[in-house]
Length: 495
Ligand SMILES: Nc1ncnc2c1ncn2[C@@H]1O[C@H](COP(=O)(O)OP(=O)(O)O)[C@@H](O)[C@H]1O
Ligand SMILES: Cc1ncc(C[n+]2csc(CCOP(=O)(O)OP(=O)(O)O)c2C)c(N)n1
Ligand SMILES: [Mg+2]
Image 1 (cartoon, protein in one colour):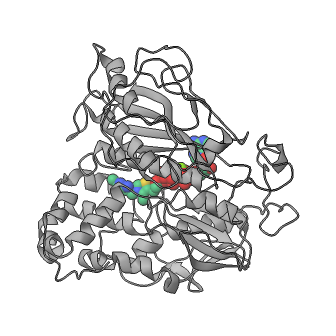
Image 2 (cartoon, protein in one colour; image 1 turned 180 degrees about the vertical axis):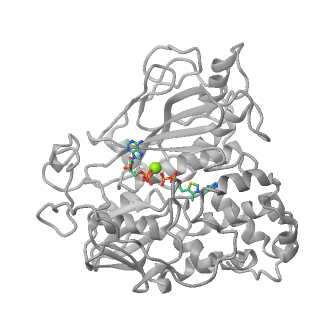
């Protein structure tokens, strides 16, 4: 962050970033439940909340052997070698990137016919894609696609109505994926699982809980839905291979969205898969459509461990380094900007200088909220580097670090000195908002960076920077500079 909040001239950027004026009822009603995430209210500076050392999850015994070894398959009750893709010699297969995804010229018609089988649904189908050879898998993936790739055939229903028309606008826009043997259109999809084990995670986004139609476009929501699920898979050390997307579609789109919003959502999903590092080659292979009162986007993500053990939350050990890949606090800052615009008295706030003073920062932070960029490539890299524990930061740094701490029965001691760059990146806008920048960094969620622990002395993979250390302690939890955190604990849907 370079420009001065007080000198940067106003441009249309901030207005564009936050151009939708929000009805205040939405703001007030939704935030009644978010008592610990009131970024827009001036927060007293100071230290943060005690990371309540609640009942610790029992430490799992570690597999004997090399430092950082994790119990693999404890949940499944099997050993690491049980995965069909595991190397029997105990050495991890080196990941060389996804197989190239099938390419299709933008705007080109989608061929009919299933990916590998005949059509069942009367919708455009994917071309057959040969199973990639090992050599093909070693090739770099396709070049990044534009953030919002053009819709192919979108919005041009061929005489279909209702659900079929929606699908006609949706399916052609979705990315095919390198692991997809059979994509959307049949009763179920077929996704290759080269490792023999499948990483699977699901997260739902609910209108006015995770996004507001007035502040986020359907493309933004699609991006976020993909990004946060891709991050969950990456946080296990896996490469995302496929997404499945279930949508609740109200009979009338929420304002200001219009009827084609499902196509926009598909464009956002495709843009995230194409544009996030480490996600290229991940396809959207299917989903579900149903009617309902409120927009809900539920995404299930699959991933491939490439012969490595999953990086769980319970492997951190005293002496490990705590490291973070990605940004932290920016999404919360962007959300604070959007929410502040919606609250009563927004005009007075605008008059305080944010509109004209920090437009670049404002636009960047709002964008960080609307289109988070989890470093999905850093997850598999962390696994290869011997990360002992990892998760993505969705609910807040202290809160999610506490999950590692409790699962591993250790203390994670975060350093404000090491986290300072994150604080500095949000400070100008935080100051203008009257929000404590440290709270944004320590409690803000939804950046979906990867928080991992590595054995002392390990070479951190690219993208990771140290943010603390793991200590032994009678009460597992999180410290900040050696002291309990005195602020809020991050996001809790029911807290
Ligand atoms: N309805 C559910 N049924 C089964 N497991 C669930 C359900 N909701 C959450 N979980 C599991 O509880 C754990 C915590 O969920 P969550 O906080 O959503 O994780 P994350 O932050 O990684 O998305 C995850 O392992 C998740 O799979
Ligand atoms: C309108 C709106 N209000 C509040 C938030 C903030 N928020 C909603 S959910 C959430 C935490 C992450 O979502 P969750 O469903 O808990 O994801 P998970 O931890 O399961 O990955 C945050 C910070 C938001 N994104 N949008
Ligand atoms: Mg979840």
